[in-house]
Length: 145
Ligand SMILES: [Zn+2]
Image (cartoon, rainbow, N blue to C red):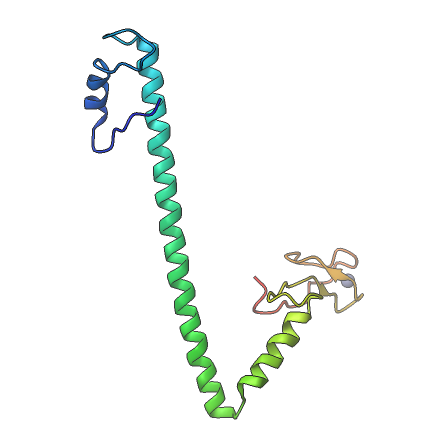
């Protein structure tokens, strides 16, 4: 049972339910339980629509931020090229190098556990100390977040 209630307030919606015939109940005067079920369905639908709107807005905000970051990255790269003589081929080579550092060339860079400066064990990401020797964790990459 789906009732289009867009643009109606809840009071109008409830009042309108007195005239609602779902084809199962007969005539006027749907039971209180049926009215409550319709209200619950309506609330669930409104809640789903709000969540969909929130996700759409979040997606649009993230897309906007991504486009701005791309613009800033390109501007920074142009400054670097102009001031150092680096080329696009240099950039592509560095991208490939960094991409492969995590063991997979997949267009992503996963920051893994850093090596402990004291015992050379891998310190789990986010741990403030080495779990093997209790030395402070090594400084992580500023890009590891
Ligand atoms: Zn250690």
